Image (cartoon, rainbow, N blue to C red; front, side, top):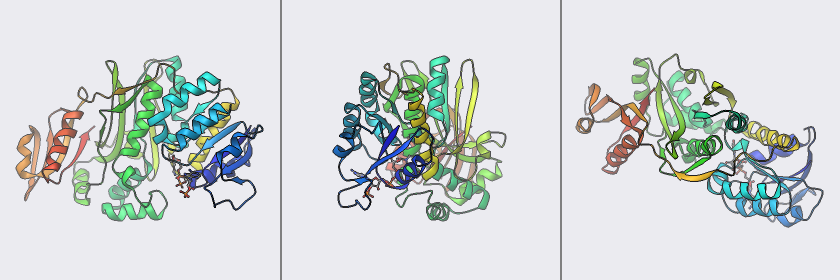
Length: 380
Ligand SMILES: NC(=O)c1ccc[n+]([C@@H]2O[C@H](COP(=O)([O-])OP(=O)(O)OC[C@H]3O[C@@H](n4cnc5c(N)ncnc54)[C@H](OP(=O)(O)O)[C@@H]3O)[C@@H](O)[C@H]2O)c1
């Protein structure tokens, strides 16, 4: 199968290199921006790829929704398989791409967009067809796991751990999508779409780790707890719950042993029970490896990760409840019914009674809008 590549950045270069060595696959041209063609195998327009009948598949690694969506539709209309690592694209327009690919009998696969090297979506897709998936969850963002682990094990301040992650190439110059939880949230949106035929497009709750301090981590350690950014999704009536938030975990939970930039992707299925995949969730070769795996799956006949039944829904996070840990100004602590209450000057650290995910995220948003500095995490 001859494969063209769209985009020649971190992931695109990795795909191109791995195509040169993979069985069954062959390097095709690489699309770069006009004026950036510096090799005979690079092209500056998509038309050159579409017009070449020897190209069977296109791997997209440009990022963003447009022009990736329009290009994907044109690739499929031209009768070529479309494989992408782009979670923003699949979250926004994946259902339309999947419908066209199905109509044409072509592959539309996006395993590398959720979990990088981990074959998570592929396994979810197979589990959904043979069993009933009950829950998807895990650590799906490498940058934040690196930062949390550095703060926990090396007592680093948040800013220093972030700089370290950037120096190692784990975090981008603008780390907002990672540290705000948005990147992990997009991944759980894709997992819900594959596992439950429900793509939660709004009503989502998202909390990151950018307000965490070394003093918070010292307090977690005193309690024997470890902080990880977890995502979770499960069916709720006709829709799903879907959210990303920091969670404080007791030492016997597997997530505490997920170190550095590793990911842990899990699902629970009715008959098969609990499954977990541990590995590299991002970076050049782990992500390119995920794209190559999807291409190999297409060679074997794999076509769709989304079923025709998949629809966009509004997530419902009002029925899942946790106890929450909060660090907040003392004057605001009365707003909750704390099970535990520790004061240190003007700051209170409390653990609440069970509160719904939607309620806690809304309450904190309101306090922040009024100018309060608040950190919160669910208690596992
Ligand atoms: N990096 C990771 O670890 C990782 C992990 C999982 C998934 N992904 C996904 O993989 C995709 C690519 O990420 P990346 O890290 O490789 O980004 P990147 O390093 O910024 O590479 C993107 C490349 O695509 C090029 N490009 C963008 N629009 C283009 C267009 N219209 N025509 C031609 N070239 C275009 C960019 O060129 P310019 O530089 O000129 O803009 C750049 O070279 C994203 O969807 C990302 O979410 C990345």
